Image (cartoon, rainbow, N blue to C red; front, top):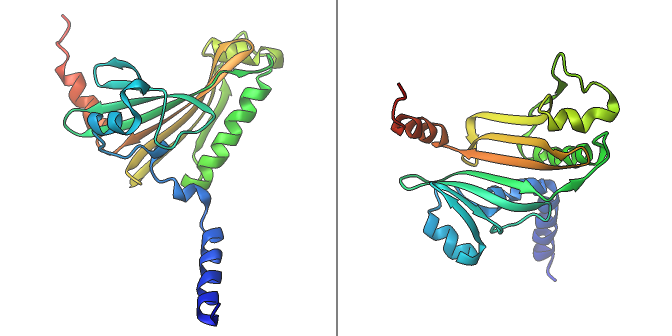
Amino acid sequence: MSARRLRVLVFLLVLMFAIPWGSCWAAPFGFENGMTKEQIIKLLGSESLVKVEGDTYQFRKAPQPNDRFEFYILTISPERGLLKVAAVSKDIETSVYGEELRQEFEEIKGGLTKTYGEGDTFDFLKAGSIWDEDKQWMMALLSRERELASAWQFSIPTDHVTVLFLEARALSPERGYISISYEFEGFEQYVKAEKGKKPAVF
């Protein structure tokens, strides 16, 4: 190998390890802003489509899936294309203290932080809750009296993402899951337009 080719190889190796792995995953789970329903179904296959409600589509697959997550919920506007990507994790068995659920939340948050920087984390028990003992951590979460979530808001969109939200939810005192959602540019305007279509209630 020539000295020049060796220098190029060394440079590429240094560059590869200098760039955080998270930055290589610009599109959430491989879904890109503005993708049409037809493009997504062609990419994933019609058998991966589980449920449709209006502009909301639930898939069991993603272009770049993550083993932690079980299904993906997309908001696809007929005019603007893909505007939101949400993913729901597999059920997480945990203690009543929520230890395993919290650990999973922190691991996912750590990966997101490497890519998007520090977000705002909300970890608190609502005032006046009766579920205030450590062993009632999951019961408080199940009763929606406890919050464990992180949020990122970008005044300048990052890879077309304007809002990123991560949340821990409870299904029972010993089982929960993690949800994550990415809102793309135009999603807020889409929501406002959809609200305007609803007839006024008198």
